Length: 470
Image (cartoon, rainbow, N blue to C red; front, top):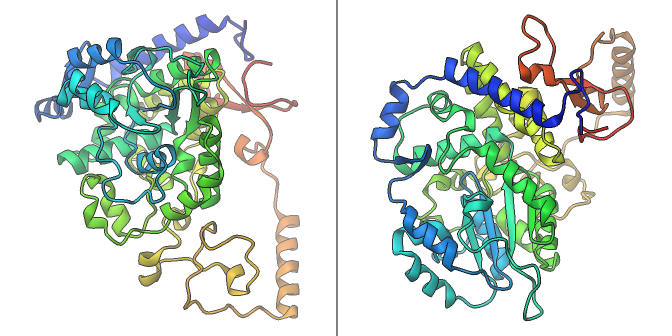
């Protein structure tokens, strides 16, 4: 069919032209440089067929695993194109039935299936995994055609339990790229700052195990074909500072995996309580500093977005243009989650929370350092959330704020009303402030808007939802 927009050309032709335009910009503006050559020679990566892998990766063993290993009932494969260290702990606890996602030894088993096959050999890994009892959790960075087991998975369970399923985690590309850089920096001592890494990684087109955009699009197609065994979820919401938002996304995952949702609240509450024995969690080096500073277990989404935008704003206009074009495939897709993530990325800093709300607002460490933000409703005894589910601090020691007098409140209301009535409306409000549905402008991604100020998204003054087909 056709896509709504000025060009009205067939969808395949739109995607092909957008791909050519972006790749041309990549070739012109993102040439190999000393940064990339240094990265290739520091013994972290190796390249096979244009895809970068860790140097310990053994493609023959991964291929053997893919063709020889069958998933059993209840197995969960989690595919993400970026590191999920804290999120992995939360999901392992959910799937395998643990109460404490901070527990030392929780992820000592070889959950990284294709990585374990590379390190130990496929036969050794399959033998070890066969001895696990109960439901099993495995993670991978693979696209559907490289899932480290026979695929497609069987949708019907033989023993009456849930069938094997795939949980696909996607995120705002800014978050995915940032946590990948942070992992390499902390785990391998990479000396490059984020802007250098963005240049080397071509804004996500060249990450470990392949292109972050192609990975999500391939799995989005599988979600449509096999909704019973493949589900896609937002890793950014699992990294929120608001426990209720984390709980909502985790409950969606639990429902898809046929796990009682009642378990989710206890796990989320535990994830926001810093473990006292952090030194025992030595395997998760890239996350330990966040944990020591009082953050929750999962990778913090808001921090990623602010750090990315700060680095992007310091880069050249050509690099910023390349970044916007990199989002083309998600913008032109029909998957609502990918469209929404791309739209947020294109809004830039406007899509991020304020800086003072982008750091942990509760927790023992934040409270002790005076960096927490007290819950004003808890101080008055009227907070509707339990301490575990409120994103603000309920700990003792906060002074109750004195309520302004009735006269002061009346004056403030009058001042606010005068401010609202005296403001001159903006002649062209942006779509993310108007509250109206939005649609994209294909010409922006096809290079047809050169010399104009045509934005990538336009406000849609008709009723409708975000998916791009009318």
